[in-house]
Image (cartoon, rainbow, N blue to C red; front, top):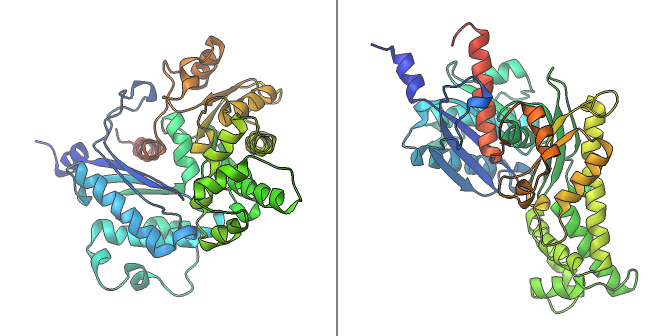
Amino acid sequence: MGSESDECCRDGVILGVDGGTTSTICVCLPLLPFSDHRRLPDPLPVLGRAAAGCSNHNSVGEYAARVTLEQVIAEALSKAGKDHSAVLAVCLGVSVLIEMLFFISRLSIWFEACMFTDDCHSEQDPMEAKLVDGMSWNAEAFWGIFPHHVKIYVQNDAVAALASGTMGKLHGCVLIAGTGCIAYGFTEDGREARAAGAGPVLGDWGSGYGIASRALTAVVKAHDGRGPKTTLTNCILESLGLPSPDEIIGWTYADSSWARIAALVPIVVSCAEAGDEVAEEILNNAVHELALSVKAVVKRLDLAGKDGTDSFPVVMVGGVLEANKTWDIGSKVIDSLLEAYPGACPIRPKDHPVSSILSSQLLLMIKKCFTMHFIPQVEPAIGAALFAWDSMMKETEANGHR
């Protein structure tokens, strides 16, 4: 007869959360029995999946961000027919900057309260009850506040995105280009580097926000005579239901939401596909900025080796990188990367058109990167769960358990 611990492990689940400016996804996976990435079941058994809105606390505030996280976690567990006690490990992949680690420490206190007590439903904020005035970031204290049997991993959402293309293993580079953008890389010995991801004020120009804000600027400049005429003017005005370019200023500042601005990207792409030179210049600039971010990370971590030809994965996720009829930003970024680093192995979503027309040479490079017989792409939330699973397995094996 198995022990209570063994029974818990058999029924236990792993949670993965991908939290960003546009949406937040949580998935619930069973405890996978395999220690070999090449033998993971395909498709992976997702027990429950839930979606909610923004969990970027810079955009919606700290309280709204953790309410969103609480919502998706509870809903994913409910759909899986599990409760909080079944959780063995969780990875929170949230869009935060290095300077926001204090928020993560507060988030972890809330998470402990919500997962293992009823404090999150009380009138008193569990974070306010547990935080000590002047508390500063301390990694040991951060991990120590959680129950010993649950593994908690709080990472930048770029980690979840990279893990989605490497089945939980952190090696290579990820490029995220959605509302915001960031390039993040890891080496097998644990070194890491990032480029961009500092938000719109500091110039995430390859992001959806960056593209759309440049388009709005182009419309204003065309209207007042500082820039060339562009079809962006009529297309954007029609989309927003505005009578004149003069109204764009009021519309822009009426709501500071980054995602609201970034939603205009499809219009920019459509205008570029129709031959608008201003729109084409905006997208070409975005391609340059995105490729430059990846190249900066690759160079800092020496991912391509001394001669620049070593193989390494580049996972590419985000709405900006999705294909369009003729103007495919993601493919143009890939072309720029392969020109500089011929050993780079781009990985894009499974349903992306380029996945079905990959050259045999590129397929061989991908297999070399991962020693796998398939191209591993899953959504970032699943990548976060796989990261938690892989990290937990490594810790278990390091402690002499199987």
